[in-house]
Image (tube, rainbow, N blue to C red; front, side, top):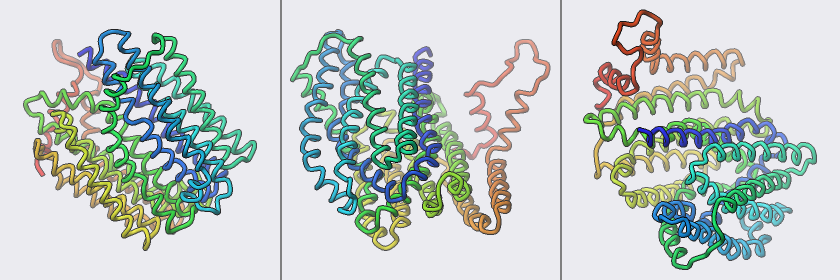
Length: 507
């Protein structure tokens, strides 16, 4: 149990660090959208995507590989070789890949951004430097996790976040540097964070030792991870390149903003859940009624996630009006579609449980490949005709196909009785609710808020009202008999829910 508490503690702390970053991106929208035009926002999205692709090749799964071999070795001398060899490889890969890209930065800017972006080469210089620092930072972050220095990890993450915010405010608002200011702030914050991590690393490890044999082992483990990382990036972000080919950077920026909001809302739900789920899933697997428990958790997760996504969809229009300028107003119509897409995507966290329990991770690659191909096909079919809306609906179809195809493959390992019929009914009902409420904002602000809040509260009461009343009844002050427990354990609570809902395991 100590191990479980330890895992839960550290994973929860790491989740807090990620949540803070997502919240910051949402809270900084007023700053970014007032200092950057939609075309600027689209330029930044293309720069991030290109740098991200290069980062996958440079990283080569090195953080995961070094972490794995750290625990496969016993002596500190061998661990020194593992970590220093990993850092040495990153230095060499950065020089080999980033050097030519920097020399070809003018051509790269013309191809990805278009010749009308005058400072494209400068933007790529800053983005490539940030990406190189970030690659080293990712490996050094892994070192903190291996050492279980979760407090230091979150402290440094928060310090980096605050530094980045302060620099961006100064460069964007104080100096009016636009995209250059944003990229410069990101570079300084990333470089400073990586430098601090490197100093901590050097002070806690032995002298630098590079080993070719260790390098081959690390590459052998990490290289296959490039495939899944690239495939994941394709079906998450390749639509920006397609959009750029058919529309201007302004439309790319509006779509990127809507996508970022939907992704951030999803992560705010998924990160805390995943931090606990990675522990609980193995505890549930040992229970005699494990399959029924997995089905019950699935239903509650879907209901909670859809409730959050419904809120984001209902209030996207007025909140974007408060947080952004009118130039970004078209993003409000795309946010509900992106939320729908991520609702489908998040189901995979449950569907892949058989893979996690049996460690048959190779079965993940065909699923990611299928999703990447599916996304390319839908982008080709929909973006030329429907532009940003086509990209959003391509994401819906891709993520639905990703989760459903994954479910088909994972059911060959084991089958869980997920309540698809009931969850599908909830999804359909919420879609109809959004359709019915979407025009309420056109009547008046008061009408929009009244109808949207009432509709959301009705769904919240329908889905979780009974459980809330049961919770209050259990925790109501009263006399406690000697020998009787004062509370209900999570396992007892889950069994009670299953007894109240005996059809939770049926579809």
